[in-house]
Length: 188
Image (tube, rainbow, N blue to C red):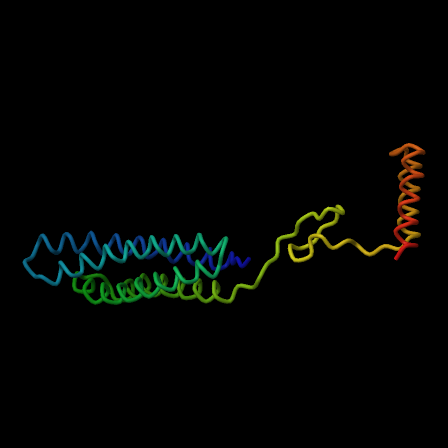
């Protein structure tokens, strides 16, 4: 299983920025469309709300990166492409409103950088195998769950004797287990 916490964090931050920027672009374009009869405001309005939806996709992709980085990376790549393109187009229209170019560049570059870094981190995530307890009581990875730890006959007999001395088993159980261990190593 692949997971990337870095992609989750950057994708979530970039998605939240794009969410705010898309909401802001949609609302400002709504005001601009109602104040003037210019049809370009309607286009900006639609693109602002589409960016808002793309940002929701980026947040979903970021959350998916926390569990499955490859699937989250694909969702983030699509959302990054959508949000970046829409950010740049919305930027050109919103500078007409009187927003400073420096402020607009910061608001546009931050989500783009965060989403690109999140997408790259999601695709570069390494395989992580979850440790599980195998039937022998030791931790192992999912690939070797049933692999028994290698012990010699002497180690097993010593372990068995210490269990008997701690009174974890009766004398009858001890003798039976001892015979089983000896048979296991002599009948190979």
